[in-house]
Every structure is written in C-alpha cells, then in structure tokens.
Amino acid sequence: MSSSNTPTAASATARWRGWLQGRDLAVFHSVAGRHWPGADPLLPQLSRSANHGLLWFGTAVGIAALGSSARSRRAALRGVASLAVASAAINTVGKGAVRRQRPILDHVPVMRQLKRQPVTTSFPSGHAASAAAFATGVALESKGWGAVVAPVAAAVAASRVYTGVHYPSDVLAGAALGVGAAFALRGVVPTRGQLPAPGRPPGEAPALPGGKGLVVVVNEASGTATATASLVREALPLAEVVACAPADLSTAMEKAAGRGRALGVCGGDGTVNLAASVAATHGMPLAVFPGGTLNHFAYDLGIETVQEAAAALTAGDAIQVDLGRFRPGPNGPDGADGYFLNAFSLGAYPELVRTREHWSPRIGGWPAGVLAALHVLRGQRPLEAEFQGRRRPLWLLFVGNGLFQRVGPAPGRRHNLADGLLDVRVVHGGRGPGLRMLAAAVAGPLTRSPAHAAVRRRRVRIAGLAPGTPYAYDGEVAHSGTELLIDKLPEALTVYCPMPV
Image 1 (cartoon, rainbow, N blue to C red):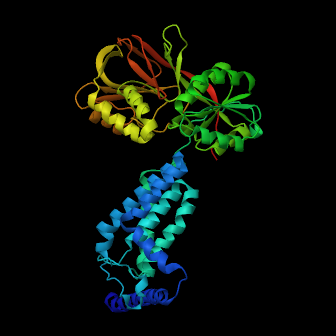
Image 2: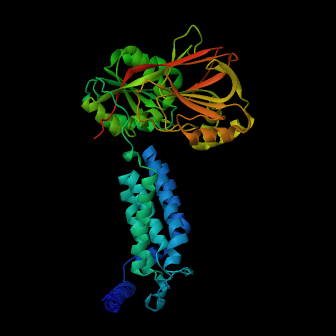
Image 3: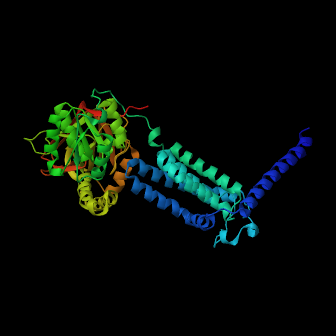
C-alpha cells in the first residue's frame, strides 16, 4: 500500500510545484508588462543603491544622527546587526540550497534593466532579505523609525521584480528570511522593551500637571541639553526653565530647590549628579530630562524622552533609588561628602574620562571615547593602593551604584536601582591592560580570576593612595587624598519615573 501511494504523492507534489511556478511566472510577466508611472527612473536606481547594503548603512547613520536619542541609536545598530545576520544566512546557506536560474529578460523593458546583471543564483533575494531584516530590526527598537524605513524596504524588494532580476517568490522568501533573522537576533540580544523593569520601590512625589511647581536647571554646555530644554518648555509650559553655564549650576540648583516643589535637571550624568545631591539634601523629588552626551542614569530609569519624564510628572509617579557616597568628597577632607548615581572609579578610567572630555568638543563623544581608550591603555601605568587589606597594583577599580550587567567605557544596564549594594570590579595589575579589561567586561558580574574580580559589597575602603590620585564619579574627575571610604545611602533619592505597563 505504501509503494502504491508513492507515485500518487509524487504526482501531486509535482502538480503543486508546477502550479506555483506557473503563478510565479505569470506575476513576473504581469509586472514586466505593466507601466508604472514614475517608477522607471526611481526603482532601478533604488535597487542599485541597496547593493552591498550601502543604502541601509547610510540610513542607519541618518537615524542615529537625526534621532539624537538612545532609542534611535539602538534602532540603527539593531537594523545593521539584523542585516548582517540575514546576509550571512543568505550567502552561506540560502543561495546554495536552491540553485535557481535568474529570470529571462525578454519581457522586461530595457530601460528598467540593471546595467550590471547579478551572476549569483536567483533564490532567495538577498536584497529583499537585507531590506526586510533592516526594517524589522529598526522597528523592534523604534516603531516610529520602523514606519519611516518600511516603505523604502518594500520599494527595494519590489524593485528586484520590477528590474527583472528576481521572481516574486524569490523576493517573498528573501523577505521572510530577513524578518526571521531580525527576530532570531532579538532572541539572542533582547530589545530594551524585553528587558525586565528595574527594581522600583515607590516614592512619594506631588503630581505636577503642566510642570507647575517644577524648576528645571539646564546645563548649556551639556550635549543636546539646549535642544532638549525647548522640548521641556513645550511639554511642560508651566515649569520654570533656567539655563546656565557649568560654573553657575550649583548656585542655580540651590536657588531652584528653595522655590520649587520639585527640582528638574537637563544635562548629562555629571549635571544630574549635582542635581541629585541638591535634591537629596533638600528632601525634594528630582525630575531628569536626558540631554547630555551620556545619560546612563536616565536610561536605567526607563526615561529616554522628554515625553516620558513629563508623563511621570503629570501622574506623580516616582520611585526611590540608592545614592552612592564617597568620603572625603571632591573638596577634600574638610568638604562635604561626594555622591554618585552611576559609578566611582580609580585607575585607567579617570584618565580615559579626562582624555575623552578633551577631544569630545572637537570630534564628538563616541569617537573621543575610542581615541581616549586607545591612548590610555597604551601609556597608563597601574596605580598602587591598599584594597581589602592588601596592597596591590590595579589597572582599574570600578564601584557601581547597584549591580551592572557589564563594565567598561560604557557601563551596562542596571535592573535594580535600590538593591543596597555596591558592584565592585577590580582589574589587577600586570601585562596587557586592554586584554584584562576586555576579559573583565566579557566575564560580567560576580566573577574571579587572576586578572580581575567582581564582587558585591556594602562598603569599600581604599588606603595607601598617592595624594592627588585622580578618580572619576559619574563622568566627573577629581583628586584624592591617601584614603577613600565608599558606601551607599539606601533609597535616599526620590525620582520621577514612568511606571511599567
């Protein structure tokens, strides 16, 4: 019975395949024979521009530059990464699995045909896969940018049939593979929306519709703060917005704390650090508007746009977070304590920060960070300090306010901003500081090795420092005495923050 059914099954499969091929060819001829107003000069050029992914790389640069937010940069990066995964799958497996010949161009008008015809096999379409992967990757991080990119991606896919280099089924299969590649990447590298919300002990803060009772201090020299301040004025018309130079920030914040119900800040992590110390001292809630080169604290709160911060203010949604503390503070033994929201560090990182700040006004924040890392890791010597009762050479001592997912020039995300713990990472002295720091970053939290260690502590004491040793806290650089004590003030700061849905 099994052998008698085999010819019937094979015949049915052949008929089904023949029908699909017939429909595929019919659609191809229909597209070739139809006049599409305005498409003749556009689609062939669009198809050529997508060769080797050049169109999508350029689009990614545009998204990152025009978006001016972490979400836009993530969307651009995920789009390119999804494209890379799709291209690898198509070129290593897809093209060799089905060796289909390209369509015959007899029915395609000459003006539509590409000047250089592809020589690879037809199934599936690599251009369609790249377009779909890039558009899907972008949309997974940013629906707004995804809506902008999707029509261009669809046009590139359609252009492959229009110019006669692919059958419709080639394009559909390529697009499906591209979408699958983007989702496969998301399974390995989750989007920010998939990550669990950080620990959020609720805090009490007044609801301020329209920003009434809020005084926002803006650092004029910080990243995109000036442009962000304009968005704050639009979203919160009743708020008072004060812009000032870096030298006047401390005075402006003290005055703002004396006349508002809440203190707002627009700037990078260093500016937010100063605002947090003022808000905690006066016992008032803090509203953070990301507007600096780096905005780690705001992003860990889940605040990436002015609208998200404004929504929290309107609803009165707030949480409590820990405040890191180091003594003596930046003004020496007789000054006030120093505070940090993100991280405190000794060793190579302070020099990296100083070098980055020197170059960033000329070449931009991220290029300056790369240049600073290369410069510092090539010429830096390990510092000598007594840590955990033992004197040793150290390339880096990193103390995070809460557990980070990774450490390095760009710290990772924290899932809990009120865990009461310090995330302590040490890169021991020895040869190859670059490799040692890379190993520490890859190994992640709670690890130990001869080159590095990562532990949790509630308090850290560092002694035996050479006077004037540089240290960094939230991107600011100061100089130490011979000893430092680092601990935390649990849930000492109330911050407006959108609640998870």
